[in-house]
Image 1 (cartoon, rainbow over the protein chains, first blue to last red):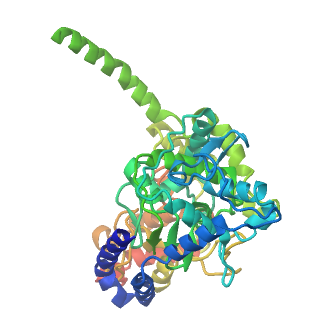
Image 2 (cartoon, helix red, strand yellow):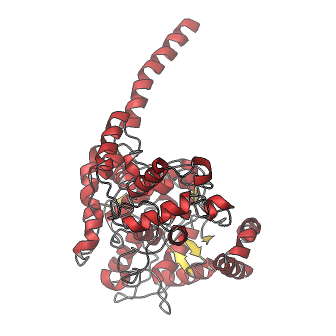
Image 3 (cartoon, each protein chain N blue to C red):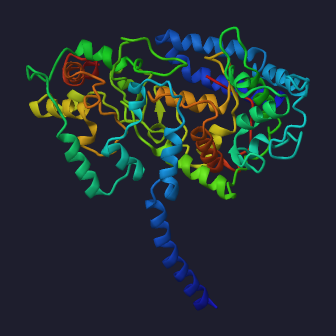
Length: 271
Length: 215
């Protein structure tokens, strides 16, 4: 945690030095940096989500009064180490390729007896209403910190999912003719001052995937990968895919496969 | 030994090269492209208004660009360019150069047009060209993106002849008339900007008084 904090601080210093000239011209940017610094003063706020997630994981909850400690995220019941880094993957018991969030929801339904609707109602935080899913995913993600992303997609269903993700990545539509590839298919580009990763390479996809879930300073909460991708689609001016939709899991599989081998640094902290 | 190695190497290259070329040409999704389209289309809530869902429709240009990862063979690119050139419409009065001050505002606006249940824009939210997202323009704006080329001193470098003015208008109206599958949106085709708004951005680019050229 200390090492991560040091890294984040160095990153913040570089960010601040770079953005310094801009701040004078753009008070919005200045506000952002102020918030960013404030948030960093006590480390990554995502650490609090991680703690809360641990509590939610071990607490007996739901109609079945059960904890999530027997949840199988792909490494066996209750085995969390490296689970996030190896998702999405194919699960025999459901016959589906599932990502961390769909599998977590599956566990909350089967082990704790919640309904899917109850569990997913608050899949992201709204002002005054925190999301249990964000906290749990932060906790699960942190258990893969320092481990390599490992989604070779060798099972035929995983391979199919990765290919479908690739299709969606290049699919253009909407009033701006966008696809994911427009912004994320080239090296060294940026939108305004925001640097863009080339998600078609291991380095680029790795840089993006290793830091999620991530605390978003501008949003004041942790974003999961589902939230990140669904919001990309909102920004492309498309309708929003459903939470846990297969199209999002397909994109995640494509990206994790491309990023495979990259060491996780999570939870991250971002603009 | 050396001969054998050379033969092996030569054969490997001979076999690998076409395989590599083929791989580069495979459309995204491969044999699962149709499944992927179906999976994508079925990802949305049933109560999405029709108007929202229409944003998932693909015209021939979008479909073809996706298939070729935005890098179509020249022959197909030319076909798309012709198709797109034919869509360009001009303002009723025929004047292609408007007010650079209006254009300057439009170039900076990146809001508008967001739909969905989470964070939609209110109806009537101003839409702009969002030019700075991808292009450098006026010197004083340092928060510019780099997906497109720098357009600083656009008019200073190219002048403001009728040809340049028409080129700038046409390019903004339908970028794919010039380079198929470019990253740049087709602002006129999609009615994202009106022809009049496009003339203002043209003025921002070519007018000698515009900060694009003056500073």
